[in-house]
Structure formats: C-alpha cells, structure tokens
Image (tube, rainbow, N blue to C red; front, side, top):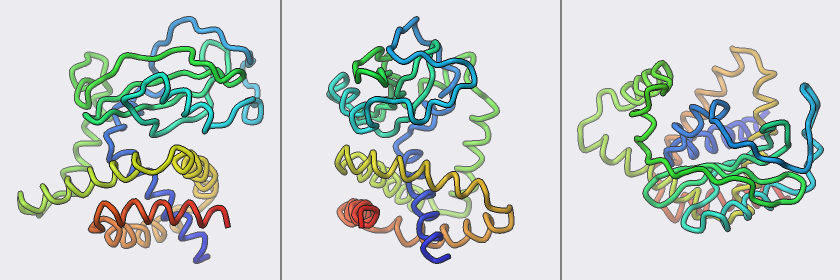
Length: 232
C-alpha cells in the first residue's frame, strides 16, 4: 500500500505540474479543437481499440513536435483519433507560457499539423470559452490562496512557476516516461472507492506541501530521481 501511495503521489505531482505551466486552457478544449482535414496512415473505425496500434513511441512523437516548434517544449501527449486517423496529440509550451498543439502521425512519425500559438490568457477572450470550467478553476485558485497575505500568494505563484520550469527542464525521455506512468496509475486510481481516494488525497497534499518549497534544482532532482526509480 505504501508503494501504491507513492505512485499516487506521482499521479498528483504530474497533474499539478502540467497545470502549473498553464496548460489548463489547452486541456479545457482538448477534445473540442477543430483541426483541418489531415490524412494519416493508420485509419481507425468508430469504437475500435487503438491503444496498441501506433508504430511510434510517445518519445518519437514528442521529438517530432519539438522539431516542429523549436522554441517550445512538449509537456504532454497522448494517442487520439482525429478525422478517423490515429495520431499523437502533443501539447507544447514556450517560455512565455504560450501553448499550441502538434499532431503527429502515429504510423510514420511525421508532423501533420501545428496549431497557432495561444497566449496563456487568450482562451478567456474567446466567445465559446468554457465559462463553467473557467469559474471552477478560478474558485479552486481562490480557495487555495484563501487566508494568505499578498506576499505569500506571490511566493506560492513563484513556486508553481518553478515546478513548471522543473518539468520542462528534465529530458524529453524523462517527461515521456512520467506521462506514460501517469496514465497507468490513473487507471488504478479510477478503480478506488471514494473513501480510499479521499484518504490518499490527504496523504498526497501533505507530500505536496513538502515538495513545493524545494529549490528549483531540488525540484528537478526529485523528478529525475523518480524517473530513475521507475526503471529499477
């Protein structure tokens, strides 16, 4: 159980890391983005299981995406079906926290599409932005910072930015390994009861409090050490 709790802590860590680099707006319309009529090499029928059909790895897809957008880092990616073809959908983030998406053919590893870069606040100006999601996100942030002084809020935001920088600073291979692990652990999480989840959430919150104040170098080292543990 202790080892599983540690894995669940990693689940929360990766999820918050992605959020901390402002990927949230990109994920808000993850499945609602309109793409051009791309043509891949692996057609997928409705309802078909495609988990094992890719000819390339997530590392390959993230490498293609970073070559396509050299001033950004691939921070997240997964297999998806777009226009009936199997692709990797990769979320990219630049130094100004602008984000865009790259579609990579899951058969050949070729770049199929690169979206325009969106600023971290651009989605709030869209008429069709998910206002319900936005309000929920804003409430979470207000609740998190409730009772803090302006100086403490500034420090917390600085620590969150450091987490995002640490995530982007580890190697592409390490990022891919943790994303894959995240997906595997999430399946275990989904099988737990609400009571079990609540207990684990409290444990993870405590571990998170211990992680947050670490220096940028220590945060990066923690991530690299965790990836090493996955290989043992």
